[in-house]
Image (cartoon, rainbow, N blue to C red; front, side):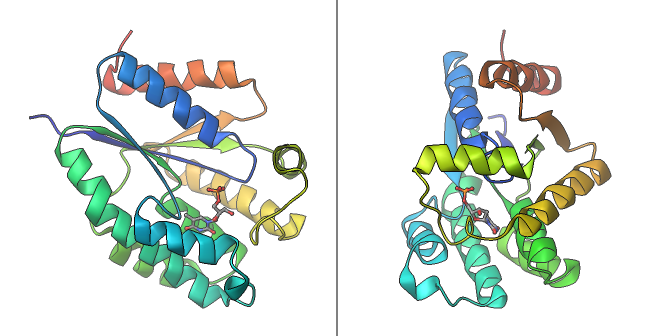
Length: 213
Ligand code: TMP
């Protein structure tokens, strides 16, 4: 049986990656592919508990950057071994709403923990399981914030409460990462309409893997 493919989606808050993942999932299923969607943090029972700690629980409010890094890594380690690897090995497409690049950027760059420790943690969490292709949806900080505000009615989670300067670092970090890894990344202008982006993503996947018409 052919091995599946592992596609990750990355970008700052409000970039629209969750919408695009759902649309891509529908298209792939429509052309007969087995598809699994995952999100991080989360995607397993353990991971969803960790997600709550990281984003909403009052116990997480005073979290150190180091504890935060370890929690993201723990969620990913569980997701890779229990869900992603078995699914890819069964021949499916796995579409990940965030993966290790998020840790490289948010904890390594925006929190300032540094490339070295984040790289060690990422390697430990994912072992050899890495995305074949990564779509980066690039959006300005102001537009991303505006979209989050209109979506959540003004309620922000622990990460969303970070200042604009944090998300500027996230944006610049992602663009540099994509620039340094052109064989894996596809950079998209997320200010385009959802329909335009959907077509661009589908076109790119077709070119790479011949996923369908
Ligand atoms: P989101 O997926 O709904 O955007 O929320 C996830 C939040 O967690 C987002 O603020 C990015 C952040 N995050 C990290 O800081 N590091 C990570 O490794 C991951 C997966 C997410």
